[in-house]
Amino acid sequence: MALPLKAADDLLTSATQQLAGLDLAADAVPAGTDQGMDAWLRLTTPTGVRTYAVQTKRTVPPHTAGLVADRVGTAKTLMVVGHVPEATAAIWRARDVHFVDAAGNMYLRWPDLVVDIRGRRRTPSTNTWVASERPQIAFKGAGLKVVFMYLCDPATLGLSVRASGEAAGVAHGTVQNVFRELESTGYLDGGRRTLHRTRELFNQWVGGYILNLSPRLTMARFVAPDPSWWKSSDDQLRRVDGLWGGETAVHHLSSELRPSRAVAYVTEIPRDILAENRFRKADDKGNTEFRHRFWRFSLSSPTLTVPTPLIYADLMASADPRQHEAAVHLRETDELLRRIDSE
Image (cartoon, rainbow, N blue to C red; front, side, top):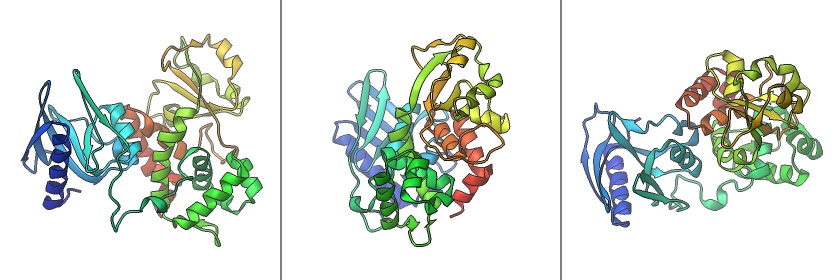
């Protein structure tokens, strides 16, 4: 939905001021309402002049960041946003979507010049959480594992602290801290053991997962001579308590996305799979990735796939537009994700 004209103008004024502070002269002119943008912006830099197609937003949460195109027609997109969450910024940097926010965070990259400013905080207002009211533990490190468990299986809210820690694969103290924090921020009714605002909670979890947990999960990457080796490896994966994730999981669920890489979550590297398929270590991403299965609870599923909230998050962490489209479709059609979005 388009911003009101004054709000869009205020954001654009703020952006040009932030750019001017870096000696980048910005001149903006309105665009027609049917052009898919809010303004044209001409940016003069020490190495030349760039023209952007500007889109203005109050904020863009991580779960919709992948839907932003890096171009409008032939012009490069510049997102001018009130506040860009770091998880959204990470997705945009990976996809080369340029942005500026009101606090001065920005990412602009050309062959001869890069501007990448991070970590500036927005000014708290009456309709936003102040820093002390935002969850500090739940969306970092081990706390993300606990929130993941609660979202996937709300029945685990009724477990003892010890049982919860074992199911989530974290220390008992982490469970207690996350539980209290979710209560204090209104996401959890501790008495009834029920979650509230689960759509918002999930969106925050996705952002935290992409930024703080996903990068730590890779166990090994390989190149397989036959990129479709995974099609006949279900039994071998079961022997290491493994499950398919990411784009491989989507293919198992619907066959609508042909995976470019095999992704599996395992408790240990499956040596028999490596030997049988003649894997070799990848110098970069390769076509096969084994990731650490960080949870210990189980959900009944007809397919050998990780829980759908994790599939969705991994798809959104990718820079591949095909995976982002698959993520949107999954969120609209999967029963668990629709339940999460209903509250």
